[in-house]
Image 1 (cartoon, protein in one colour):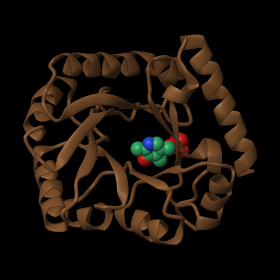
Image 2 (cartoon, helix red, strand yellow; image 1 turned 180 degrees about the vertical axis):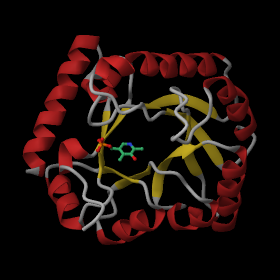
Image 3 (tube, helix red, strand yellow; image 1 turned 120 degrees about the vertical axis):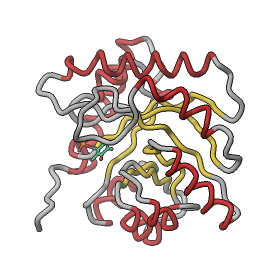
Image 4 (cartoon, protein in one colour; image 1 turned 135 degrees about the vertical axis):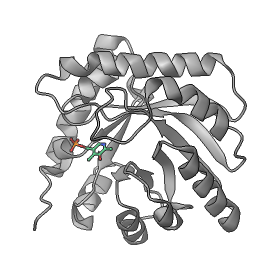
Length: 230
Ligand SMILES: *Cc1c(COP(=O)(O)O)cnc(C)c1O
């Protein structure tokens, strides 16, 4: 099932790239494997996938230890400061930094481990109360502040768009995030690049690709529905 689903998702990404006049190689598919067993991840691995996303620090650490070293683990969940220690040196990219307090705590852990961390700043573009992330208008100043932390490197922005029936409803959100990343890039801040735009999930990744996503995070579309109660 995983292999077949992957083919469909990859084909959809390819078509979205074509529509937008983008190159397929500019879009990375992150297979969101949270709650899913290692065997399913292996299936995706054997189909050639190397980028996986997890939203719980301990789960990422456990899976990191069980899967081949060439897997790239993306941390996409809300990160509590007391869990940072589980993912430093293991996550290739932390997608969800939304406060200076958290950034400082990551910096501290990096110093302790003599490591560095690539991060994205999470923006709650839709301003949903239920979601983490910064307001659009607060993002620039946080980016400038975090840029001063020597062990952290901002690689771009991330957003989680609302859950909608029609993905077209999220197009404006993706556009706003893209525009913000262009504005930040134009400032040429030291220690900041805007090469990553992490947006789009199972329900809306095709629209996100059309609007410039460099990384889409697809879970259900690859591994099927999650069951949080079993
Ligand atoms: C779970 C999750 C996803 C994947 O969601 P699907 O709708 O299953 O594709 C993507 N991004 C984040 C941050 C998530 O927590």
